[in-house]
Length: 81
Image (cartoon, rainbow, N blue to C red):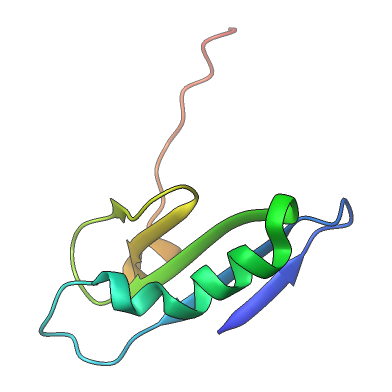
C-alpha cells in the first residue's frame, strides 16, 4: 500500500490486489480501513487498483478503480466559454 499526504495534511492511500479473475471485495480494503481509522478527519480517499473494467464505490471515500484508468484520458469541456 502507498500512502500520500498533502501539504494540507490530508492522507490518502492506494493498494492493489493480485488475481485478475475476480472482482474487488471488501476484504481488499482492510489496509485502507486501518489507514482511514488512524487518519480520522485527515483521511481524504482510498483506492484499490484492479485489473477489471469498472469503477465502484466501497463506502465513504473508498473506491475500486481499474488500473488502466491511470492511463486513460478523457476530454473535459469548459462550459464557461
